Length: 351
Ligand code: MRU
Image (cartoon, rainbow, N blue to C red):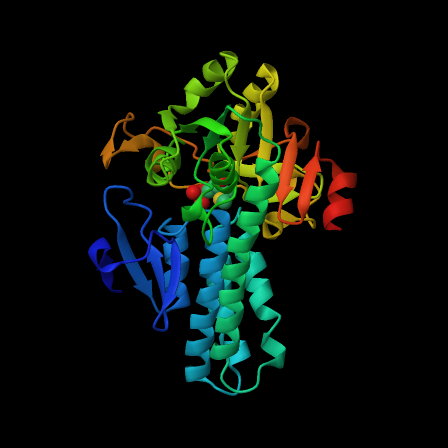
């Protein structure tokens, strides 16, 4: 694994890049203090990077997985050019198991698999072209969602966002932050409140930084300040991304989204969920069936590597929660929007 530091990187911050036959990931564990890129030439190393949150955010995980399939195919073909399709399976399983909630991971692997049968000879060129297409289409989808979502926002709006659904979480531009970016460019956004997102602090470390880079006015608040903020009457929208949307419009996203949505409904704040079609899982009937990742409890017992909770405390660390469709005002995808989502409307757009 090679370390690049920011001084060698001329491009602006992309979470995922492909360069010189390698996958390059921006290490999101240490942002914004350090901008370090790490490079990968094996699918199992990418699976570890996904598990360890070097790359995170549902679409970015999917794109990294697509490039990891290219790496897996390269090594499978080197090991056994005649039956690389069998040899690759073990690596794909490791990749597919790396994080459970974001459906984009398995969506991307399935998209890549579609090409397997028709490939003759070396698989890498064909698969790389597909991975680049998945990456490019994600960026294009984000811009389209930005356009569609921004049309719903009135001038002078103040919005709350949770976690990071920005350029860092996608191929570029962002889903929730894509809408906020477009709305800001169109002069509609007065202020963004970024909730810190305990325990991994995506809001504090990533979203605040990303918005600062674009000179979008942002205030960082602790997660539990959001209800009182909404009570003030100054907030117009809660705008978030998603890791998986069920067929009835229930939305899995970073833990804390559900309580923000309850507060939003209580205070008359509208709730917008912005996610590409690759996040919609029509095979899952309701949010109850979405697998929720439970992460290591040291994420909540420790602070900066020091345990601040009592020794041997039993902790529970679900990384996601499910917001029922009835708390969501609109789901924005690149295929169109679903107002007041339910199973029928979801089927009409995505069936
Ligand atoms: O645990 P993370 O940081 O991968 O969780 C990310 C989120 O919950 C995002 O809101 C979601 O993936 C949408 S990203 C466009």
